[in-house]
Length: 243
Image (tube, rainbow, N blue to C red):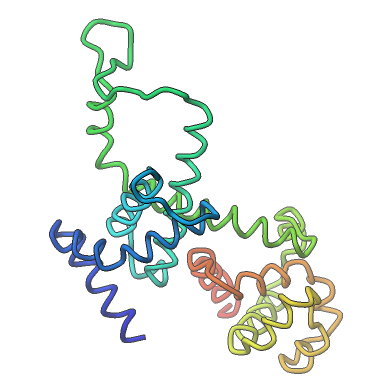
């Protein structure tokens, strides 16, 4: 936990100091290379792979867009690196050639160049960083939920409507977070542990079964990462518990 506090302090320093940002990127270059290789699903060839540059830029964007309320920094940076690399791959598929930053963006005389527009949008960039990270988490969660036969539509339709039930779901989520062994078995077997949760959380089994798909989503969110989504759920469930 102390290491995370040190890292967060370094990130906040790097927000205001370019040299500090360069030092932080240098320190975590092995992490950036690892995330890039993981995304490419092959060893990284630094002199040939443009993706490493994309990942380094994404790491710097993560520094600029990070806030303490978003959880640990490295998972946040990892998601942004993945998002930027995905965007890069999609652009590569659409465009064979290279665009010039001096290329006009309109046909009329004196139209802004691409470089001018990018510069004008620089101040807006941080607002999009959070959206990209959130989108990456949601896309990753959708894939994971599909492994359990659950969709976002299922979750929405299965969401508790009563405050008392929402409070019960909050208890289940907190219990699961405090019991990694239960979560590991859940991921391994893909079986919802209704009996154990009913017994340990003092919630009727029929209530758990009625909202099984919603609770499956909560347990998946507790397993790994998903800091942004977890932060949102914390506020939602806490609100239901306090009423």
